[in-house]
Length: 189
Ligand SMILES: [Zn+2]
Image: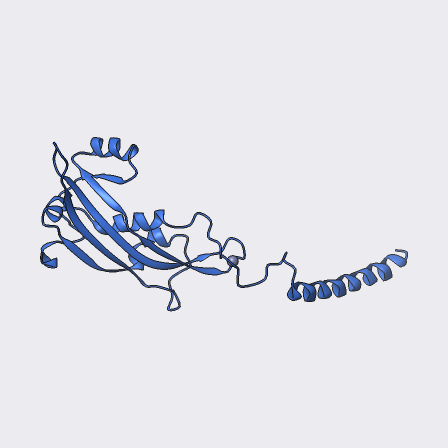
C-alpha cells in the first residue's frame, strides 16, 4: 500500500508512481476545467455535477527483451449540461472515461508512437499535472453534436396536438392579415 500523500496529482513523478503501483483519487471542481466547460451551459446550483471524480493508478508492464512500460490508468466521471442541437433545450451528458496512457522517454518517441498507436503515448516528465490531462480526456469524450435521444418538447416541425394548436393560431393570424389586406387593398389610395 502506498500512501496517497506520497504523490501529488499536480506534480506527479509518473515513473516513480508506476514503480510504486501508486493509487490516487479525488474530486476536482468542474470550474477548474474552463476548456471543458466552453460549450456547456454555465454552472449553477441546478447543474448535474459540480465536480469531476477521478482516479489514477500507476503500473509497470513487463515487456520481454525491453524496458518495462510505464502506464497510467485514469478514470474520470462527471456530467455537463449541453444544448441539444435538435430542440435547443438543455440536456445532461454524463461523461465516464477510462483512458490508458503510456509514457516513454522523450517527446520525439512519444509523438512517433502516438501516431501509430490506439493508446495515448506521452513523454515522461518528472512533474505531471493530471488535471489538464483529465480535462483533455473528458473533452475527447464530448459528443460532437449533442442531441437528446428523444427530445422532451415537441419540435416546431413535428406533428402533434401542440402543432395543431399552433396551426389554429396561425390560421387566425393569417385570417386577420387577409382581412386587413382585403380591407386595405379595396380602397383606392
Ligand atoms: Zn433535444
